[in-house]
Amino acid sequence: MSGPARSALQQLAVQFQRQMASAAAASQARKVAILGAAGGIGQPLSLLMKMNQQVTSLSLYDIGGTPGVAADVSHVNTKAQVKGYEKDNLADALRGADLVIIPAGVPRKPGMTRDDLFKINAGIVRDLIAACGKHCPGAVLNIISNPVNSTVPIAAETLKKMGVYDKRKVLGVTTLDVVRAKTFYAEKKGLDVASVDVPVIGGHAGITILPLFSQATPKVALGAEELDALTKRTQDGGTEVVQAKAGKGSATLSMAYAAALFADSCLRGLNGQPTTECTYVESTVTDAPFFATKVKLSTEGVEKVHGLGDLSDYEKAGLKAMMPELIAQIQKGIDFAKSS
Image (cartoon, rainbow, N blue to C red; front, top):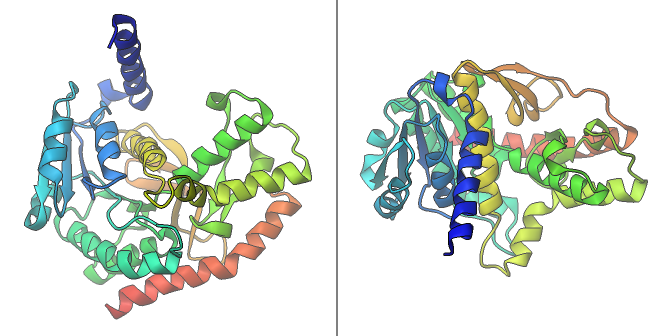
């Protein structure tokens, strides 16, 4: 690599670190555990969390391959100390964790429905959450494993059985929906994506994903066709990537990026710098017992769940259309957890 190219890459890395944790000087020692660290999301996520200056201990767990990932990531010259764990060492991976990020499970492949994913991932999430409840019951949990609309209720019910459920600390990661909505909106209207914000509410699958372009900033008028196209592209973003990868992968890199952003906000909150993010949590905002809206993240996880704000007629229709599907997916997760 030439000198100028190397310099540019180094500057980019420094910029990313600063963006991820400008509050690092005031932060406490924080242990972050990633469950599923050797997978397609887990590996880039491990790298991104190693670059986060709020992380002092990075614990990487998977059923196999983790020592190699840990060795690789540990060479990055940032302060987090990295350890890799496999198979029977889950307890050691979790003890003392402040934040647990869970991308474990199988990714979606062409032709797979969310129900297909559920059959495989539900048991994986249940068992990992039970381990969290036993070994780090006070940790904030960031659940990525799909289908999130069902796996978050599974996590809640599992922890309730153990007597350690805290609704403030069980969070479904829907940040990728926000990242996509921001990107697509900025591209469509020629905006600086760094200055764009688009709230996304509901769930994390298909029509349950509802970007609120009426609340986007900066506010730019959208025609009816533009609005519908942007909404559908946000909802189908995962399928777009699966098809583009021709069946050889899913949205792993963008998901890792979104998960790292959300984890950074959770760490900021834990360290006394409240932040606001969209996330899928236990909620009374709608008739669905779990729902994604903006929340305030603070020292104990979710401090406040915000309401929907003013919705356009298009968004009201989208909200009404999603509810039966979202509630059914939630109930499916609850039923699984109660019967297992």
